[in-house]
Image 1 (spheres, rainbow, N blue to C red):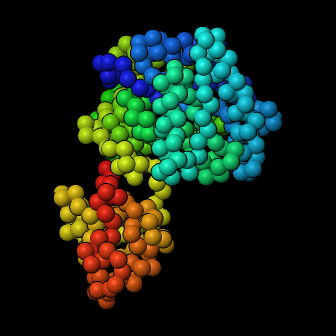
Image 2 (image 1 turned 90 degrees about the vertical axis):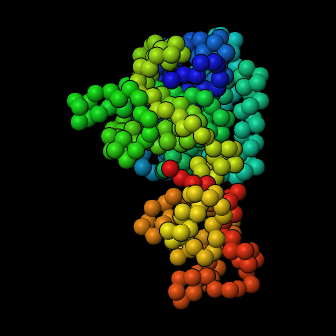
Image 3 (image 1 turned 135 degrees about the vertical axis):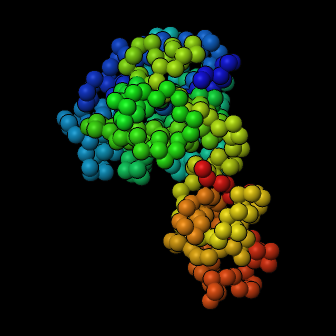
Length: 367
């Protein structure tokens, strides 16, 4: 549950929580949420908000009743709606003399190590000065975020980035339900197993994306970063207060006890793989048990086209992905290195003398 002492919390607010249908913000509810956020602040917590709603607001102003498929129109909706969204947050917190800061992020902002650190440092500075960051995807300029991204996963990445203690996802559902038991609420999830993932359902909302599938993905990311996750019904006025007071009004996902260090978190969650390396059972055992580098002699094949320094997945001969890291060779170079028996041959490529294809500092194991 919530840590015994105050720390840092990320609150993700879904479109259904913040709006009254397409194009209409639920300002009374936003006011209630602000008051609950201030209760957390008075208890000593640092708060970051990840707020959805921009696309839905823009849709309303353009007279649309369904999320458009055309990318440029989605971007236009985001551009129009974001202005109203941040203005509403500023007005709601401003009545309490609390400042907010708008932070719009793209995947590229988190992928690049320098920009990744810059975003983290900016958020740290805002928090240190008592400012509440209000974060959203920069859907206006990032087509990939609109097509593949969602704010559940973004909130988990933000939680990982700032080393939050708790992520609270406020949704229109009370939590994860067991459909085989008449939809009974599951109060605690120790680990997001394949059986748990089978319980997820997508969203039917005209404005939202993701549904429970993306919420479970967010829980996996945050838990592995040492962050506990709540999924609660954000429409209930006292839900956030219940979490603050140590109660669980929804589903709580237990954080891993051994969380990843900063660079390993960046490798694990913020990079998009460009291909994969297939390795033998000996290489998998060595990586998982010894914490070493991926050596050339254990590689059987490559999948996809990638350049030197690309992020690649590492999978065993059964197709199970168990690691990822930065490859020191391009896919064509790796193929050149593969001999007739799917073994590496002696070449003059740098680092092959010691057989190192992915250095251990640039490799992280997956769940």
